[in-house]
Image (cartoon, rainbow, N blue to C red; front, side):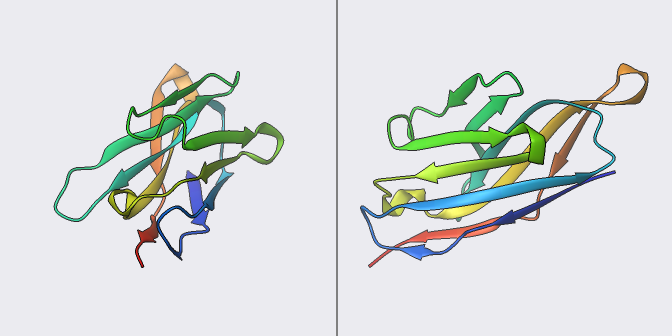
Length: 120
């Protein structure tokens, strides 16, 4: 079993910056990717950004140029640096991990979420 623990969510003013982190622990086999999704009030969960073990990043169009995803493979930790935050970035941000586990089966895990609120 893999456990994901997010941290760093907060209240920030429009135009501000924030960094959220997610640390994975437990029975980790071979991570394919780690990333962030978010769910805004009244909306479905959506992709924010993902990054593979090799460092290939993928971003939602709405955050390109403002958000940067990075990871520390040695610590099984992924970070999301969010700059130029907008009120529409307000959401619960969820960490996601995809791995290839025993018997070459694919597994997916989610964190409990961290609240990011962008408001004056």
